[in-house]
Image 1 (tube, rainbow, N blue to C red):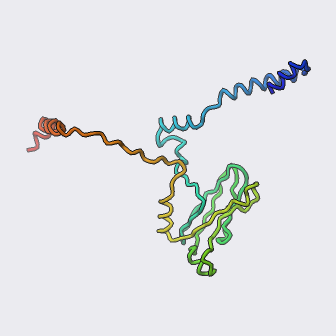
Image 2 (image 1 turned 120 degrees about the vertical axis):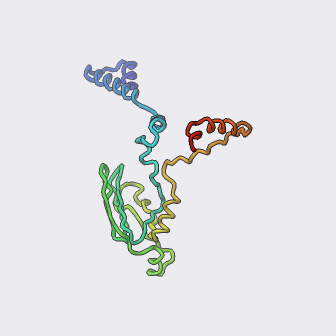
Image 3 (image 1 turned 90 degrees about the vertical axis):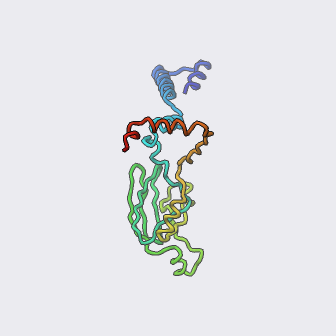
Length: 204
């Protein structure tokens, strides 16, 4: 917008006064907005440093981003489904379960798988069989690729798989550096302190 106005001025172009005012107001608006732009990563790091676990930015740090999905057999599970762009649809055809993902709200699906993937492979006589989780709404150019294998397994195997997953933004615990210990003077002060403590002297 500013470049367009400058070009017209240089070329002796004419703009109606109302258009000139509109462009100048828009330029001022852009300048005000640019002054409010912050580095989100810096803001997040500062908030986490100051507030620790209470920081709003740590709430999703343990979310799992997966290329496969696991469920425990004969256990009721609750899926809370959200979308940040367009309508999708979580569809597990073999389990006859489907729920839309709607921007701006959460939808909930409760279900209880009744047969494991291994048992289903025996039933269909196909060792390569997998349940599948896919999007059942034509949601965009990448819709065709929105699917992943779904494994139904005993609870113990499911918990072991879940424990092995890493959160989206969980920091690895820092390794504490061991400081050199001076053993020559460590014992004497401690002994003297105990000997001069009233409680220690009055134990009998």
